[in-house]
Length: 319
Image: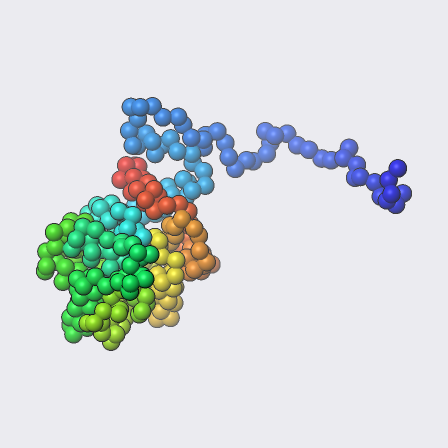
């Protein structure tokens, strides 16, 4: 005997309305499923075998928009963080530059450190835990010297920091220039803008650091980046790859500046690639700039060393 009130009974299910399964629209069908692979399958076969669902579908749509931007001769801007360099992806991005799937690079300060070290020594990414206690973290002489010398030269000549550092590395002709984004972007005349947070990078505490030069050159790069964003109207793309704070903030301010100057900025694509989806990229790259029908934003979650080669494969192999 139930302890509840006499009129409190489990609801009667006999009159529930139902429908035929075949009459219902469904979001997933077997036509979208993955296909098994054979040992003899090509890379194109592999890409076609992936399920046309969720992230794969988004990746295909992003690739299609990048191809459209190339056809329309609109900017395809890759905004990258240092982890992109540290996971060995520079050769892929350099190849995509040559194929015109990368027409500009925007980088945070850590990219300059790691890419310059790759160019000079063919290695980067020190053991912070091992060197921090002795106060040696970030004290590599060559790294701090070239970053700050480039900033001083750039400030004197009115250049952005990315161009100034690329030029200085090109003049040195380092042994591993072929693996350096800075060197290859400069050689290919592809805009490379650098966006610093003063005090966040190891070069900022070296003896030759000049805050005024760093500030002037990175501000020039912000203005150059804003012009590239302005040109995205009508089919351009901005990809944020591995920057959780600095570049999403810079991108949002560039969008604001362009619209403040009464330029039209619509019909463009943004995407965030990272192994976690953080607040700023999702808000400042994917959602806010593309709101009210201005464009379309995507988010792809995964490790850069896996997702970026997949994107490159879709760009190169898929027709």
